[in-house]
Image (tube, rainbow, N blue to C red; front, side):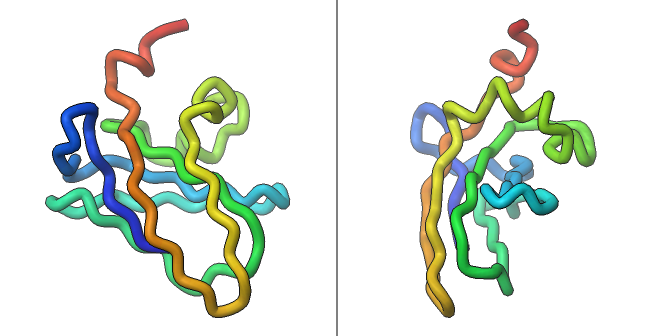
Length: 101
């Protein structure tokens, strides 16, 4: 899965944290976007995944299902077949939205 993280003005967000969360319940993975907002996840098994991007995030916070739950509505879902490649554009969740109860 390759992707680019964009803000509400469609500008790339460098350093954003992107979580790839398998829908089968296995462990989530995270990556930081490069300075151009680009992320890449390689070697994934076929299946369905949710991708969520945050502007700034504490290390490993995406591994806590209770933390992630309120943001699931903003996730982008991808379905991978064997040897499939998927390109996605993600909208970043800004820091100010993370502070809301």
